[in-house]
Length: 291
Image (cartoon, rainbow, N blue to C red; front, side, top):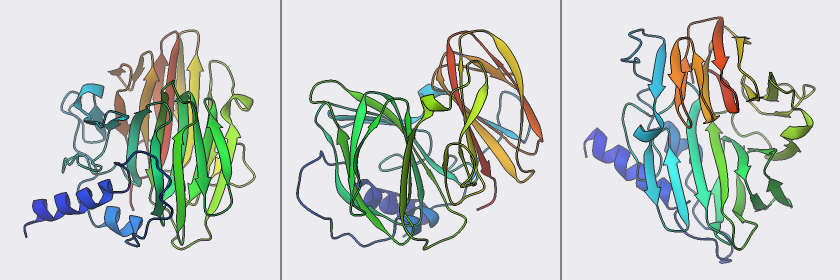
């Protein structure tokens, strides 16, 4: 079997975790490792940005993402995932998955396993109901952030908490900096941390810092801007890069214009200049560039 066929086969097996509507059938018996499935497919981290002509940026326009329409689930994949495979979009450093999903009322993902991934969920509109085998049963609301350190293994389900309205969310997976940790769950309201017209941390590697924390040398910052503003973002580590994801509105990052749902990665720099337009929301994902 050649490499391309092998990768496509592995990705199809991952799709089995996510392509069925929520039904209460009990715990899945699939014991294959999430980490192993995704780690074995790593081969291309990023490609140079052809527009800027430099070797330290990569541009992903919103309309170039992988997409899938299952009726109840409409998904957009920045990086290869499920049935979407692009060998030039496997990951950005330890950032392996960035899914922009819309789930219909009353639908969702049945109970399925994960291990050794840091999984972050940010609802953008609506509410998502979560249950897991650690005893957590909660609703993740728009304006919240949820994190699961899958570690030695978790089982969970998630579905739209409303029977009629769609829920829109970002789900982000990072490779951890240590394997087989004790699984953990955390959730908090981002709105409690918000600083208007500034970037503010919502995730870090530090238990004592504001926001949630994960097993990785990574920082997430959210910015919601009602006015035009230019900010210099200073990286926390020289080994990191930043992936900017434009949730709403528009911004210019190091000379690159971004519009709604565009993504832009930059590395080998200590800081980046960001000019944000009015009525814009942007997520900065700072991650190690080496897995």
